[in-house]
Amino acid sequence: MADHATVVHAYTHAADTLDMLPFWHYYGRRTVELLAPARGARVVDLCCGTGASALPAAEAVGPSGSVLGVDLTPALVEVARVRANEAGLSHARFEPGDVETLAFPPGSVDAVLSAFGLFFVDDIPGQLARAWSWLAPGGGLATTVWAEVVLAPGEAWFWEAVTAEDPSVGHISPAGRLSTPAALVQAHLDAGVPAPTVARERWVMPLASPDDFWPVIMGTSNRGVVEALPSDTRARVRATVTDRLRREGVTGLEMEALVAIVRRPS
Image (cartoon, rainbow, N blue to C red; front, side, top):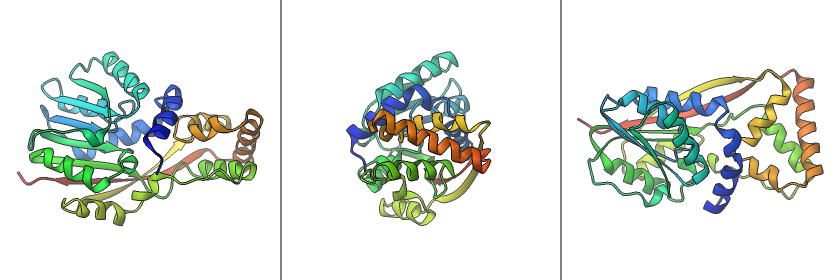
C-alpha cells in the first residue's frame, strides 16, 4: 500500500482534473442513494475527495442536517469547499486530515460513508470499527470500493505501455485489498461489524474520443506514475495507449464498484 505522502502527492497533482471525471460523481451519488440518509441526518464522509459523495449527501439530508467531509489531501478538500459554496450547501463542511485520527462520541453520527478511500487506510478493520461505534441507533455505514474491472480496457493498456517502457515501475494498487465481496465482508467481520449487504454496481463511462482517455489517467492516482516518467517516455506512453484505443474502436470504459451497506438496529 502507498504511504500517506505518496497518496497526497498523487492526488494533489490530480486535483486539477479529478473533479471533472464523471465516474467519481456517478458512484458518489449512487453510494448516497443506497445509503439513503434521512432528512436532518448527521453524516461523516471519510476520504471525501472533491465531494463526489459528500455533496449528494448534503442534498439528501437538507439544511437541517450536516455533512463533514475529511480527506488527507488539502487540494481536494479545497475543491470540495468551492463546489459546496457554489451549490449553496452551507451545511456541508470539509477539513483536511487523516481519517484514522478522527474521533466522535459513540452514537453521535447518523451515517458514515467512504467512497474509494477505505483501501488507503493502514488498519481497515480498525477504521470500520471506529466508524461503527460512532453510529446512532438506526444509523448506516456505506463503503464503496473498486471491484476487479476498473476503467477497462484503457487502464490495463496504460500499465502495459508503462511497463514496456520501464519494467521497474511497479503496479500495486491498494484497491486490490478490498476488490471482492468476500474481502469486503471479511473486513467488516474482522472489525466486529455485522456482515454488510454488498451490491455490485456496473457502469460504462462514454469515451467520445480516444484523446479523452488521457484526462482519466491524469485525474486518478495514476497521475503520480505519469509525473515520475521522463517527458519523452510520457509522450510515448500516451501515444501508445491513445492509438490502441483508436484501433480497437473503444467508445466506453467499463467499471465495477462494490457498495457495502450495514445498519445499526433502531
